[in-house]
Length: 136
Image 1 (tube, rainbow, N blue to C red):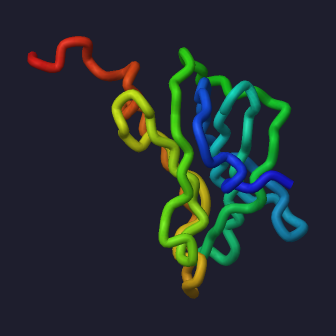
Image 2 (image 1 turned 90 degrees about the horizontal axis):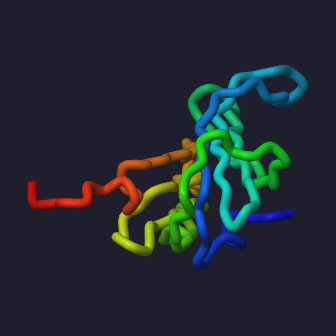
């Protein structure tokens, strides 16, 4: 089984999709947030486990056979697990060219009564989306 921490290090990010899909949860279908992202040609999916409406968390990280539909020229990113690790199980991807956070996925407040699913995608932070002339 692949874990978010397995993705620590340098990668090439080439696609991201943020979706809301019906997923089987505890024997019934339920709408869940899904974050798909492609690193080094492999697409990973982080799926929300909505629990009870107040709490949510990330299910297991899975390798998907469905490619992302929102693709772009490869961007070098650095994957870092958010600290303190005891309170978060979140992978943060930073654009290496500009140091900005572009993607976060996992569960925050893991040791709290109200954990929360994290699926954040900030395409405007990609260096390829920055204006060519910043002195306008």
